[in-house]
Length: 105
Image 1: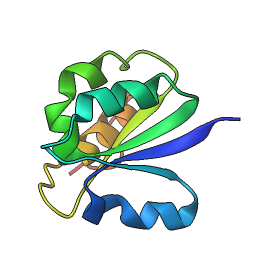
Image 2: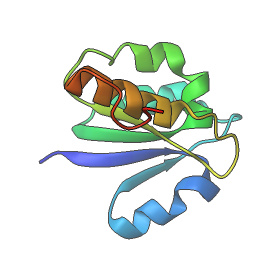
Image 3: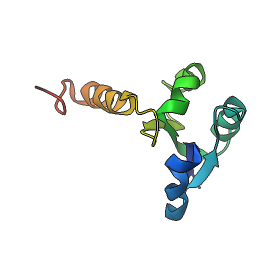
Image 4: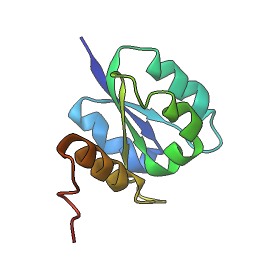
């Protein structure tokens, strides 16, 4: 059975544990790349990662851009919201639908 993981700083992702998701607390001081590689090799179908942490792991995340699993989804954290999460949602919708139906001004 596939699972869902959440990767980021404790303050941003602690609440996901109450939903039954597997949470991995990492900070810039921790070896985030090792933790990310470990969970991508497990049976996770979806990995949520804070935008701030995703910025430091962009090369590793790019390796999964065209793979069906795991889906890596950026979420805003309590610190360092970069807007990348919403940008990725917009790109995905535009790719699926053929035009920007969410942010069409």
